[in-house]
Image (cartoon, rainbow, N blue to C red; front, top):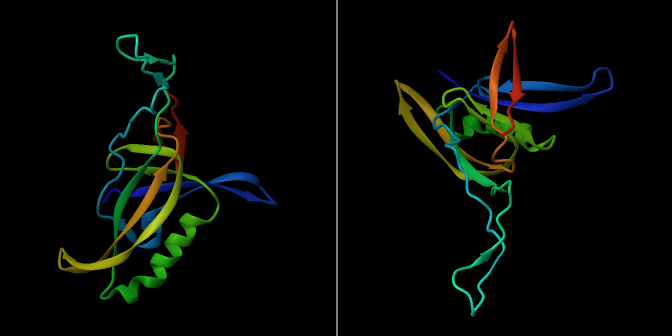
Length: 167
């Protein structure tokens, strides 16, 4: 199954700044929905509507600016009850919450973004049956603050390197 990868910058005394790439599979968590259809919405342009002129007087920049957006992702973990999965979900959320913004890449849709942050864990978890297994389903909301910083995945021998693509 294709998963979701998270890339964070770690600062250590020994190695300085290094990148850490973690898959949701490393937590025993699987994506049930896949995020990041391309959301591009331009920010409002400054405009005046003069009463004695037709149309609007708009400032149209050479380089447009785009709004940030939030995306909800459904995850699942094999467990019989939400209480059985609570510890793993809490650890996963703490990982996402600490250390600032991160990059996020979905291997299935092949879409990823930089400058992503955790917003919230939806307060409900549901039990579903999938392929004869009990899955606890929960939703996490992420905010993408850099909507045109698409990233791609480049696999190297025994490692994963996330490279930036700027438009």
